[in-house]
Length: 310
Image 1 (tube, rainbow, N blue to C red):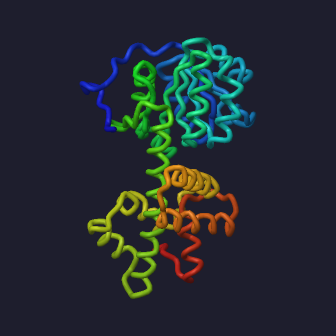
Image 2: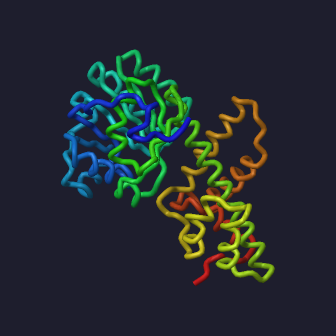
C-alpha cells in the first residue's frame, strides 16, 4: 500500500488511454470530472436524471446508457452509492466491448465491488476500483485523492485518467483485488466521521467551561489530539458550515457497510459503533438532508449550545 508517483519504480507501465471514454453519473462530482476528461479525451456522458442534460448542456450526451456502454473503451462510473452502482453495472457489463476497462470512482461496498468484478471478468472487462476523496471544488481543480486497486494490466490503463483528476501524490495503491480500494476508503471515512464528532464533543466541553471554540480549536489542532478534521474542516464548522455536499443518509450507509465489514472480520468496534449510533440518530432527527456534520449539529441541539463563532 502506498502513494503512486509518475516516476516511481513500482508503477505499472502506463500506455495511451483509449480514445472513447464514457462517464456514467453527471452529478456534483461527475460533472467536473467529465469536464476535465473532455479536455484531453473523447468523452460521452449519461445520467439517469434527465435534468442533468439541462444543467450541463455543453457535454456530449449519449441518448441511452446502452449506447454509451457499447461506444466506450473505458467506462467511468461516478455514482451515489453501491445500490445505484449495482443497478447500472448489471445492465452495462454485457454491453461493453471485450477488453474494455471499467474504472469505478464510486465510494461503495467492497462486497458489491467484488461481485461485479467477477461478473466483469466473465465479459472480458478489466476493472479498477478508485473510490475518491475530496470536495466538488477539488474535483473542479483536479486535486482529488483516489484509493486504487485492481490487477496490474488494468491499473496501467487507468493511471493516465486518474493522473488527470488527482493532486500530486493523490493516487494511492490499495491492493490487487478490486474491492481493496473500497475497504480502505470506507475505513478512512469511518475514522473521519468519528474524529469529527469526537472533536465536536471536545469543543463543546471547552466552550461550556469557558474557553472559546476558536481558541480551543487552534490549541487542539497542534496537540496530541490533532486530526485532519481539526486541520482542514473544523474551521468551516465554526463558521456554521455543516458540509452540505454529502448527505447524512450516505454517511449512515457507509457506516452500516463498515459495521458489516467488522462483523465479517469478527472485530469488535465499540468506538466506531458509537459514532454510527450518533449518525443514525442524526438521520432520524433531520431526515436525509445534506450535511456530513449533521451529527455534530445534533450534539449542539442536545447540549443547548452552538459552536458557530460569528
